[in-house]
Length: 155
Image (cartoon, rainbow, N blue to C red; front, side, top):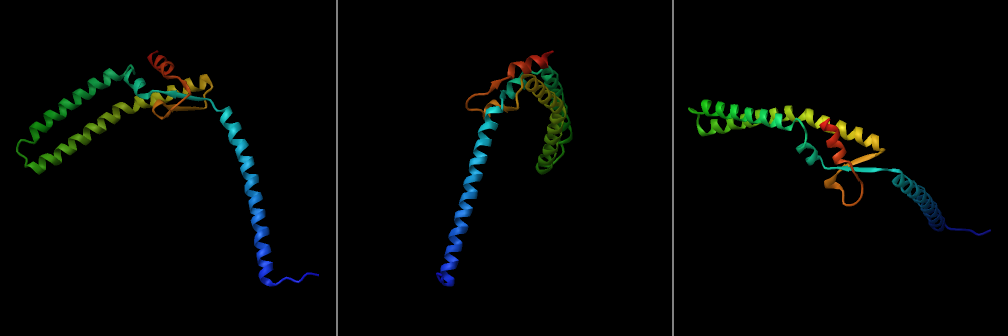
C-alpha cells in the first residue's frame, strides 16, 4: 500500500475540503438564483408620487390655515416676550418657538400621512400590487397609482 507522510495527508485533506465547500457553494447559488428569478417574476410593483398626493389632499388647505394661525400666534408671543431679553435669551426663546411650531406641524400632518398611507395600501391591494415605491426611487417600470390614490382620498 502507498505510504503517505503527514504533510501529504494534510494537503490531500485540505484539497478534499475545498472541493466539498466549492460544491456546496455552487449548489447554494443554483438554488437561490432560481428562487430569486421566480420571486421577481411574481412581484407586482406599484409607484406613487407622495408629494403630489399630499399637495392635492383635501384637508391640506385647512391645515395650512391652522399652521398660518399658529405661526402668527407664536410670532406675536415672541415679540411680546422677547422685548426685554438679551440676545442669548432671544435666541433660546426663538428655538423654543421653532420647536413648538414643528410639534404643531407634526400634530397636523400626522393624520394626513396616515390617511395617505392607508389609501395607498387599499389601492395597492385592489390592484394586486405586492410593493409600492415612491416615484423618486423608481428608474423604470412599475404601475403608477398616484391618480387612483388622489381620487380615493377626494371621495
